[in-house]
Length: 305
Length: 305
Image 1: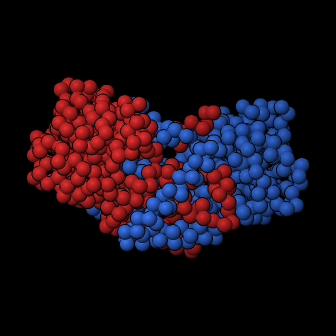
Image 2: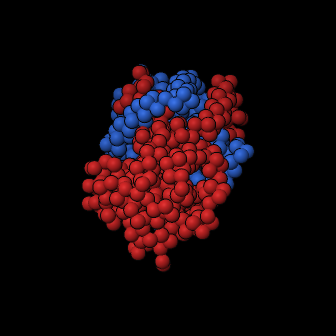
Image 3: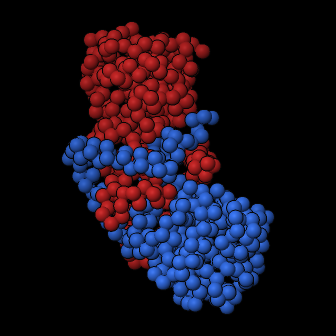
């Protein structure tokens, strides 16, 4: 397969950037890959693991000659990272990213690189791990990648970026940036906020000790702790960058929770039962569409030990 | 190993009851097991799978001659199930259960069987599946089982029940019933309530479709849908039976969430970052103590396909 891009520069070599580099090496070995991370320790480890073909000492060096640059840094760092390459990047190079909010990131990239074609993207994939040891080549397999081209984007460039993500194993969907931000507010941002909150609430109790919370976490709590172990910098940036959509979803969630609280207080079992029955259908849809492991308990290994 | 009980009767042959029967057959083959479920289809399937040695046509028949009866029915059904065996059970037979709330269940069992020794227990283990096909022998392995003996319980009987749960692979902890209910309110009941709520909120949106919620669930949402697929009857009963502790934890959670909402609204990144960093330690504790799968994403299989 001929690569849709000849030279891909990856800025930021954590979970996402590293996985892109490793996946490109497997799927499109003809494409040249270069990379940069502002943390010297991450660059050293990235070179050891071979996350990209060449780990460069500066962002400018990494993007020199590239026809695609993918920013894999937290949303709040996109603008500064793009500014760093402003003098060095080819005028025709496509600028993309993997950020979890698209309106604000597109603005930041556009402000820093006003003449390059900017086509933001968001692979809906990840794990709770971060850093240069976290990436792996199959991260994007069978996952959706949402591309949010601006209205005036060149369809040929969108098609090439689509081909690249499909080569990495992803299924691509095109969407308006603002709609993306509302969809992800509910499928990703709100779940993370709630998981962080409940883990914080549990660790602040006086009467129930932290050691008890850990010991008896298999009753449900442990599921939340996985998400609440995600990268703090990235998630801080996500909530600040997608503020309006997150606040809107949070308001709806709080109303629904208050209504259940009232049902519990007044012993209204029917309201509880009705909701608890309804929510099973969504799980079934997710399993049927291959978006989760169908085995009980996600197929956790601890029952087999 | 000589069995701590000669004849164990299991009332309710779903996930928990079935797993107890299967685990007993493996760990304590000398013990006789009988079982009953009020649903004829469940009884038929239980007999096919051999969940217990003998599936009986009535609860009275199942408990005849038993020296231990374990109720594995939803919390709200405990009282009625215990009343059904009142004339048939041996006067000295130990009465236990697996309910997720202990104060109310102990009261219900005590009211129905005032002369039998009652020693409630709660294995902190389960999956999102329910019914006679859901059980498996290793469910309790490396999980905690909390026994909540009343103040006047015979220590010899508590020791025998402890030995039984240890034989099934569990680690046993003794606790006061009221404290158990507060601990589980935070490690199990609140997480379930929140998971049910967010899945409900997501499915009620107008602008974001249900199909989009399912498609992009890998961003975090899918974790919540697993818990929200749990048995609706059981969970309705849990919230009604452990009302006070759940409402107390819910109040704390809502306050914490409101404070994060305020931080997002005012762009206070430091507050967000501080919490998001703090919550990682709890995850580490859970992994170190063997209470969850250490692999990224719970070791989900979908990256390997």
